[in-house]
Image 1: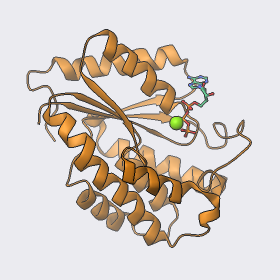
Image 2 (image 1 turned 90 degrees about the vertical axis):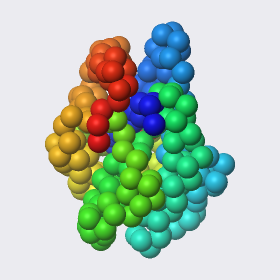
Image 3 (image 1 turned 180 degrees about the horizontal axis):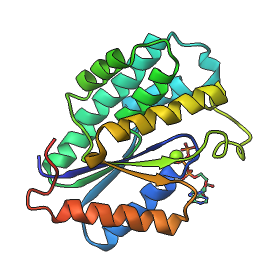
Length: 211
Ligand SMILES: Nc1ncnc2c1ncn2[C@@H]1O[C@H](COP(=O)(O)OP(=O)(O)OP(=O)(O)O)[C@@H](O)[C@H]1O
Ligand SMILES: [Mg+2]
């Protein structure tokens, strides 16, 4: 595979989708072939899984069932969208990936983090992002302005603080594959830093970092 896999991660309302759009625009301007996608919901099957996961009328899901639904979305997404695009040598820009599963499902303190990580690795056939941009923000700030909270967003501040710590711990464990940025910086400043880091990756002879 010779493409580059970039992921935006972070809590709710931190600016992931905004930065994904800005990066896609820069890639288009630079004439770099790319695919813009998201999890959950980056495939037709994934879209149905997304609706099931986020709809408040779904009610309480067993934590293992919830983790497996997220994992199923990822398996389909990697097989149908991400891996084929990387094999074509394209840049894939995803709004969320494995770290969201690890941070959110691990934060519930019900499932063991190593077990969720093993499920995620199996579901994605071991595919890791070359660069994960983590937009870091204290919980509550991003979702505060939104009136309708979905099922996950409604889970409470202590939960979201553990999610934030989970994301930061993942970044700290593999710093070469992460760019952690305070989400409060301006859109333009964040976009510029992301672009600079990606440009380094794109200019490497092999096109991507070693695992
Ligand atoms: N750097 C920024 N500074 C201030 N506001 C921002 C910034 N980036 C995005 N916003 C605004 O914050 C809101 C949330 O942004 P966005 O939808 O991109 O976040 P998100 O992480 O994708 O959210 P969600 O988790 O709901 O998908 C939007 O109104 C957006 O315009
Ligand atoms: Mg979004």
